[in-house]
Image 1: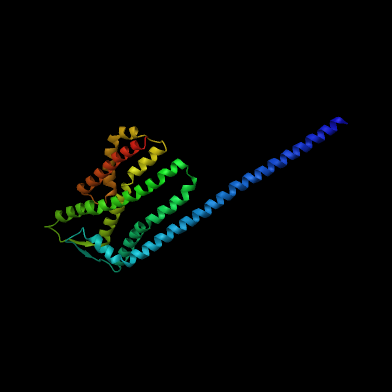
Image 2: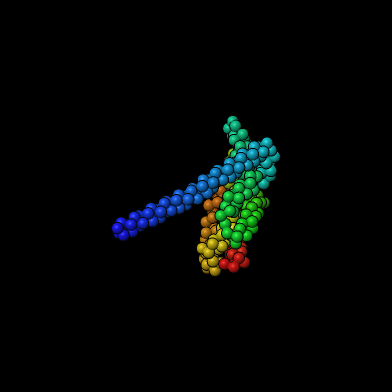
Length: 261
C-alpha cells in the first residue's frame, strides 16, 4: 500500500513541475516576443520619419534649386554650360535637389538612428553617443566645405588651364553636376575616418598603437582612396584628397589615444 501512494505522490510532483516549467516557458516566450515586436514597430516608425524628412528636404530644395545650382556653378568661373538634350536641366535639378535634400535631412536621420539605438546602450556607451554624432556631422560638413573650397576649384582650374588655348570651355550641365556632387559627397564620407577609428577603439577592436604601426599601409591606402573617390584624373585633386585622408587618419589616432585606447 505504501509504494502505490509514493508513486502517486511522485507523479503529482512531476505534473506540478511540468506545469511550472510550461508556464515559465510561455512567460519567457511572451517576454521575448513582445519587446521584439515593439522594436520592429519602433524601427518602422523611425524609418518612416527619416524618409519623410528626406522627402520634405528634397521638396524644399527643389523650390530653391536654381539658387543651389548657381551656388555650385561658382567654382567654374569662365565656363558656359549647355543643355545638350531636352529636359537635361530638369533632371539635373532633380538630382541636385535630391543630394541637397539628403544633406538637409541628415540631422533628422541621425536623430532617428540615435533614438532607436540609445535604449540598448549601457550608461558608459551613452556618454559617447552625443560627441560621436556631433563630431560625425561636423566632419561631414567640413568634408563638403573642403571639397567646395579646395578640391573642386583645383580640379576645374586644371582642366580649364590645360585646354585654354585649344578648346572653348562649353560643358554639359549634367556631366558637370555629376562631377561636382560625386566629389562633394565622397569627400564628406572620407572625412568620417576619425569617427570610424574612434568606434573601433571604443569597442576594443584596434588600439591607437596598432593604428600607428600600419602607417605605411595608410599612406598607400590614402593614395588609392584619393584616386578612387575623385571623379577627375588630375594628380592635384587626387593628392589633395589623399593628403586630407592621411591627415584625418593620424588625427583619428590622436583621438583614440585621448580616449585611452
